[in-house]
Amino acid sequence: MNDSNTKKAPPSMDEWLKEAKAHPRATRAGMFLIHNGVVRETPKAQVRQGIDDGSVVKGMVFAYDAAKVDEIIAQTYNMEGIFYVKVWLNEGQLEVGDDIMYVLIGGDIRPRVIDALQFLVGKIKNECVTEIEQKS
Picture (cartoon, rainbow, N blue to C red):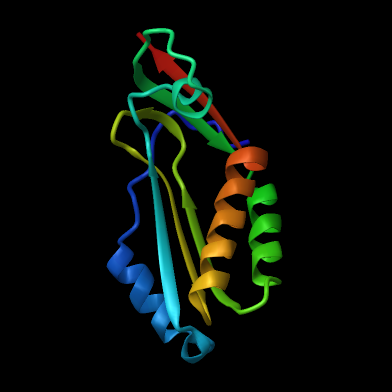
């Protein structure tokens, strides 16, 4: 796990898209989707499970396992119709509004790209990251 206390500067989505469209397999892609996860003030338990303990998220400590992320990226490339995948994950002490992750997926048709984005982000969130909410 990365354990830096310093958050990273987010990437430029304009640059990512330029890079993706210049990739040798870009001519096979009919769609690109970008996911940008951010730190929200509503606790995960409240959003996902309806448990409202009255707390508010003030920040988050975020870390990830880079090797596991790479494995899941490789799995995503094996999905039918997916030609381009790029992932950026932040780390360290994050505040409300800070970027947690960016994911860019390019593929042939909308249903496949949407499925791949859901697969990749879900696997990263469930298997690769540690998010410790700091509440008040």
